[in-house]
Image 1: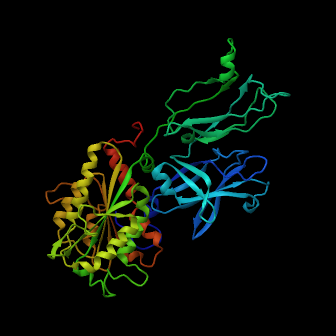
Image 2: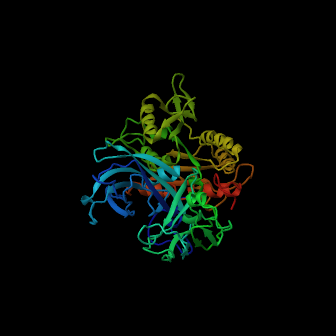
Image 3: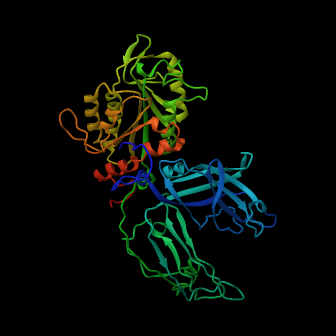
Length: 515
């Protein structure tokens, strides 16, 4: 899809660009392990505070409940956030020991914190990390575990529960019952979903109705039969008393829901986004030592090529577990024989073209500039076919575990248009998308032709692309815009392209049943 320049309201019948973005709600469950003990006569009473970053400042977003006398809390309160794939959403989780009834955090003892992006949590589904103090030193042996769950719709379930003839647990009075709901996690352990309020001095409690998202309660799978009545069983009493029946009854309701897989379902299911960069080193870019060259690195340490790499890479890198990315160049003469190449590793290691993270790509790019001669022509098909070979290998697994993204950054007109069209058509059958960022002020009409918005891309044989996999954006439209704006435009269609491919192949997210 092409980027639509300009502003103002969209034309009649045309959806605004923002409506294409992947926006959904994510629920984060938090637990702590081995927290610092800040109390003298008892254990800490921890609660967790979530902060989000806004223009370089940390803003409190929400808090959990307080877990009394517990160094290994599993918080019932969940954090629910809007998830934007095309943005870097920085989060900070801070734990405190509640000492007073004050809402001011400085009134409570600090137990440790952990910072990351929402994308890091989502791509792993569940992470456990060490907590650190304000000076970045370890907070003892404290750990935090964060699990992500998509709230795929806004439907909720409201349950009204009552207990009948529960066991008496208090020596001088009746019990103070409360109810906890657990569900099995992906790691086989039980995860706390909801905890009711405590009702004092009763064996026949009637809890207040409570509302939870459907996916929080049962992962959206409401087809399983649910018993209306559950017996409360006390294992100790069951072993000791021959005539033991139960310790009371709990009554529940059930419901049904049909689930439709989303982009976040595939990411939470373990799908990795495999990122490759293709960089144009043709002569039309100009001598990189000349400030007028598109490859000239300014005193700020950047240029339009690096800006494009950072805009896309900083988002994608959260969704690749090893963060090792191939970086390829085309259109340059290489030492020692100075033959032109349209598919070379910019780290000059053809057997291992991988760079460590976006920083590694930027470093390899800067290091290679003095060692190559800019030449031509501008051929896209070799690196498209290069990535397509790996995407084709991934299809043999018959699982939704890998999706390939090729970012091509170029300054000019495509020389091998016929071969490139054929390569795009063939790639459209594979788990692969192509992002083209045009730098400089050249005529990019040919790039927009590859973008299948207004017409279907066809190869020279007349074969049509199976789907639109090319997204073209001219960098010049973003020179004076916030850096996040380019990433939003470039990545706008990627989530739906991922879902479209896997659904067409009838491949559900890993460990999921077909919808």
